[in-house]
Image (cartoon, rainbow, N blue to C red; front, side):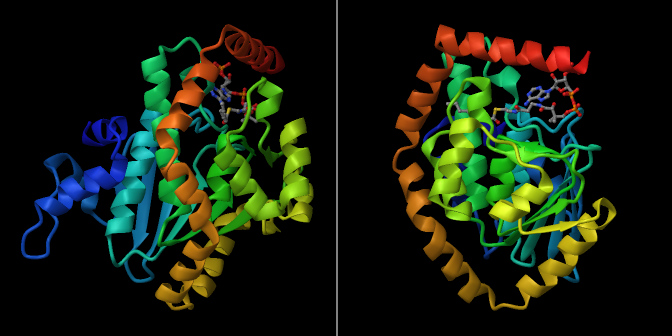
Length: 303
Ligand code: CO8
């Protein structure tokens, strides 16, 4: 609830953090009882399971929200709490994100959060999406996406926030920012994150056509960094993490910040306007109609 409230107001997680810091004493941060139980090495919330290896300082976050790890407000809230806790834990230097769901890393934003909802709820949802992106894209930890299934739209965005992407080499999986296929438009920070990864021209084509790439195609354009057999995704991520953690943290962190800060600043200074844009766009009748048609298509495809 505390996080939901923080997400709802302007200061977001940084506000929540400053509230925590303000009650710190003797160098220890005082947190609410709800959060204390999650300060163990390993924690499980309904939708997220985190295993921390104390000896290596690496956390593995398993997304476990059936059927497809769609990014609902509840999911994003739990996700942000988990990342925030790890970020505050000085012994944790690396984070691997993966899925417990078969065949799917994440289906992206929960479409039901954007369909038939009040403007207030849409605004709250979008603030949580922004928060997820800001937390991940600016993380001090080494972050690796272990993509063990399909990863469209918001799932692709989440993996793009990471420092490195390893995907299962299974041609049935796909990854990409397919927003235009739903009749919606990826906002500037989705676009900028992809441009930073694969370049302007590739992003322009990918976004206009809403392209979903097979793992082999994604590797070719640099959307993912490495393909491995499905059963080796997590072990490869762990091995890769060791390599990244061999670099002194401060040097790596400053370099990461140098590469990413311009986009982060752009969203940070435009958060409210971005929320307003999203709310007025997504609540339009024509956009709601597109979403309904897309949902029907998903159901039909299943049938
Ligand atoms: N949100 C909500 N429900 C979803 C979503 C989703 N993103 N994706 C799938 N589901 C539901 C399905 O409708 C189905 O529901 P039910 O069981 O009730 O029929 C259930 O999850 C299982 O889905 P499938 O049977 O399709 O599962 P598969 O394993 O066969 O396929 C896929 C998994 C590949 C992930 C497939 O479900 C899929 O392609 N889903 C759609 C993914 C998608 O297009 N996501 C885009 C979301 S929009 C986004 O992330 C960015 C928006 C930016 C907004 C900007 C506006 C300004």
